[in-house]
Image (tube, rainbow over all chains, first blue to last red; front, top):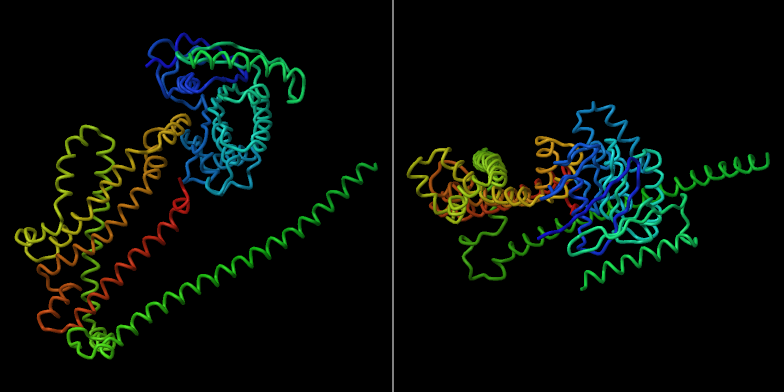
Length: 235
Length: 291
């Protein structure tokens, strides 16, 4: 079965792009291609001109949930990527604590994932990905499973991390509000076969206000494009 | 100036309330701990009372059913009377240590071989298909049925007993390790790969810990199987051991001795299981609540 057809997407250095679309439109497939979990049957994925063939630490991935290793504490989870690079123990510990501090979880370093709330777990997951200093952060509906209030805080914190680190972000979501709040570009996908429908630039300054008129205008435009994509899916 | 003092005031009052909060937290934790301790001792006490009630009921059997032959169903006081000289002479201890050594040896063999075989068959497809019919076929043979053959081949020395126990305990460990490693959540493997982990790091820090809940289930089963096969192996020919002592009691019509054996087997089975549970809690604190 063909999941994606004629998809061309360029993400600039330091850019924040959201992928949005109905379920089954292949947004997760696209993200897995970029991560190197899947190999395209046709076409190519390139990072700085080099073809991507397998997963690697220059492309960090944050999953929806349950991706932290439950047998490791928060700090051990964050240290894992540094261990893979054979970073010596004291430095590993220092950098892991620093990364946990950046997501405001230094005080939870010795807790296991099951002792953390859903939002905290996703913060640890972000810290785990960022500690190895990736060039791109691929996020697959990372905040879908947390409650609405926590989600807002997580979104704000993600934006400050993005600004601090200068990492490029590709963020998959099915929440229009989240996409407009976060991204510089919102890419709308359609299903059957998965393809890119439209590419909206969100030229609003940060921090964005959900109550503003411009926000509502963007919302309406994207909603229309999405409704169109859904109609195509139903047809 | 005003704002500065206001901020200062605020920070002062906040540290004050912090310390107050801390003392509240401490008191709460102390109370929580002491109530936990109370609950623990209450539980131990009830456990003991349960055992004592059982022994009392057993002791009362000859009075309630006077027509019953006490030589066939001796009360606990009679069993204790027989057991005491055996404890003093060290005879009982000899039987116990002989049995436990056999069970532990066989179990250790099964643990190493089972985990290795489970891992290899889960990871190498050709090996899995090659060994599937054989392993499942052998697994289907009740291990007690192999006992007479083992005695015929190896005599009644220590080796056949340890091997028999190892043989029987191998299968549950192998099959649960196989399932645990085959069904490792792909998200864990993908996380490890995108964090740049190599083969060995992934094996020891991701695949094996992820399979551990399964492996532990097999290990627990293997512990009880070890005891069952131990009895069968000792009954079929031995010169020491708990089950040997029981068969001697049978031949000499000392029913008390048989009861001593039964109680010992029950006790050690229970003890092994408790130790297992305690160890897993200590070594793998994440295990009980992990998904």
